[in-house]
Image (cartoon, rainbow, N blue to C red; front, side):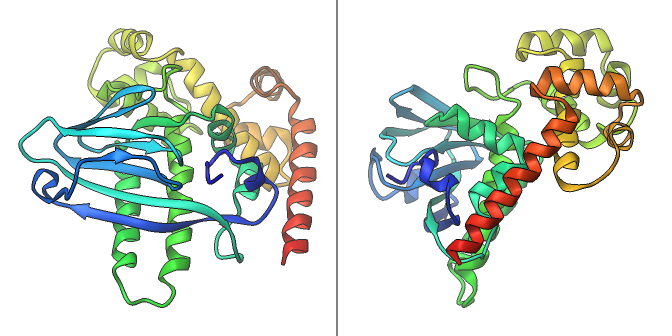
Length: 303
């Protein structure tokens, strides 16, 4: 079973290995045959220009410019259609394999990256996401360039880049609505990017709206229409996610970590952290350290 959600991948040194790829400027002319299959590889189909749609067991998936669909291994997909005259796409197909220390293992990443752990817990076979900052686009371009190169380190470098791709997929997935569909409003997407970038600053809805050149009331309404949370709730979750990383990776005091993520009151920080994470910051740090020590011991025994 090569599914990304295979529990075995959380118990060893498993890293992604790219086995197939393409980068086609005109899918209508260059697609050799009708798509009607499943395979034992995870897959990312990325639309660079135009629009495409494809059928899955979850229904019709429509993907536009700088969006992509992530398909778990063994997900049947068929009836690939192009809804515009010109559609260019990239594709990578990969699976997790128990190899050397070429990249951080999936188990190690989940220990510190809450978004990856949550993405794995959701176990969704098909996810459509928007790549507003083109991070996935550039990573996939590099992977494909390496795949066609003669670089003897290409496979290892591709594993590192594919690991980065999956971290970004999980991050983008963390702001997807419960329906599994991406936030399609550009103002909301841009506001979320501002929060991820400037979370440590004294952000307000008015300040974010000012950067987007819209009224705060309009931004609040867009968040109500396009997400399940308010602007403030999104910002709280982003800050606590970064606080979790700092608790696991540094020895900073609770007050310092609170300030580092944009919360000036330690008591409020501790209350908010427990409400969102389910445990206190101190307990979370203990759990993260214990998990890291356990993962390191397992990786060491494998080597």
